[in-house]
Image (cartoon, rainbow, N blue to C red):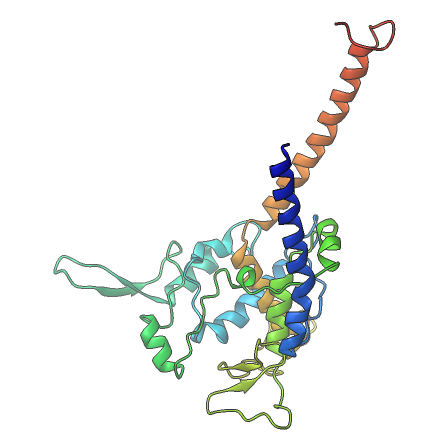
Length: 292
């Protein structure tokens, strides 16, 4: 490496560390706490989605979130694929048929509505962005498809170093859960304008979306004992819908982790074979060094 390249590398490293070191100060200046780190079934190199949790999360999304937020990158059939909620094909077909999909043009050149099919994607609740803003007082509800990957936060130094070894990638679900449970009354001296709500985890603390969840709002399927398997609380609803949004953002997470582990095992075996091959080749030399 030339001196110029070496200096550029050092400059880039110093700049990266500086941004990382000063990032927590920026967050502290905003006055908002960091979202608490939760325990997720899909965390870590061996993590997997909880099928029951994904199905509950879909129920929360369908009954509460879908009235404002679309999921334009997710098809109905994805709900039946391995690694996801794994609904049955019959359940997916019945679900898709409850939606009206804009299709066409027909032979007369006109657009028409038809029942949804498993291959269709989740329709947006609004025909366009302008209609969404008009219905939401000027705010635009973001699409849910990849929101769990887009809405993250910086954990700062030195936490990010440990994240490399723990494979921590759950900033998005942590933030979504915190946002859903972070609504509270504004502190003294803070005046909310019409259509504004106070949320301690929202940057700036002001959010247009009113509190979407409340205890007992959604009825989960009951078990044999007639009780829901999990509490029907805001905290649980937020956990479930955050997990479902994580699956929407990365539906092949389990396959990626499985493939990554297979590659790591292969590399370990391959490194061992190379080591013993090297020892075998060098052992033929009397002085332990290769021939010239």
